[in-house]
Each structure stands twice: as structure tokens, then as C-alpha cells.
Image 1: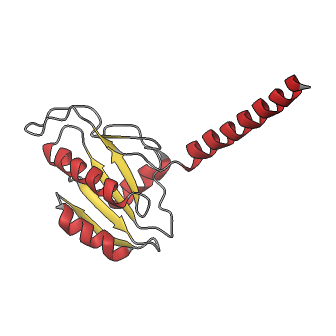
Image 2: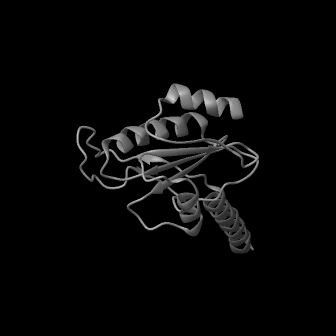
Image 3: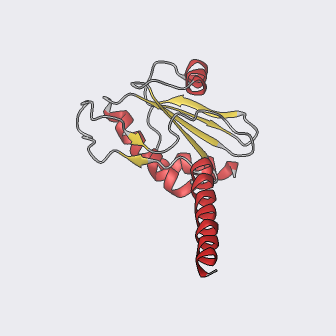
Length: 156
């Protein structure tokens, strides 16, 4: 009788834990992190500039603004913009979708579609969508976080 009681508690706890882990994995936002080995003074290829979960997701979801960055690994301008992107992510995570397109890695079909639509062969390139899926910013070059933060705050 006591063994059945503990079995029931164990099975219930296992089910709750499994549901929590499954739901967390499915609904986890992209967790962006800056590569700690970046050398900002050179065009060296230091590996992916930004890492995180769900990095292949390139879908634009209506209902939330989206920030898209296209970069090459061996570009110091891209490295600086990657650092700014992660800073923005830390500020706006949950209210803005962040999409990273590493031009030196294989891409998902959604990322490839974004690349075809927006990328003009200049890096870094940033595209911002409003919550209705309309493009409100689509330019190449570095952008200071004050300017981008104002734009994103205005979309919220």
C-alpha cells in the first residue's frame, strides 16, 4: 500500500516534470548569446558571432515586431552590430522576435526567403518588421542601439 502511494507520487512527479521540460523546449524563445571569443579589431573569422537556441527559425510572426540581422563571421562591422543585437535582445526579449541569419552557415528555408527578399550584399544588414508584418527598416551598415531601440520601442 505504501509502495503504491510512492509509485503514484513518483509517476505524477515524472509526468509534471516531462510536461514542463517539453513545454519549455517548444516555447523557448531564441536565447541569443554573443560569442565571447570575438576579436573586434580584425576581420578574423572567430566562429558564429551570435549563438543560441532556435537559431534556424526565420519566420516572421505577426503580432510582434521582428528584428532581423544578416552578417558574415569575418567582418568587424558585423561583430560590433552582433554585440548591439545581443544588447537589444537582452532589453527587448519577449516583446520583439530576433532573427539571426549567419551568411556563413546553412540556412533554413525561412531564413533563405528573408535573405532573397532583403539582403543587398552589404553587411551587416538589418531589417525590422512591425507587428503586422510590414517592413519599417531595411538598411545595410551599423546602427547604434539608441536609434534601433527608439524604433523598436515605437513599435511596441
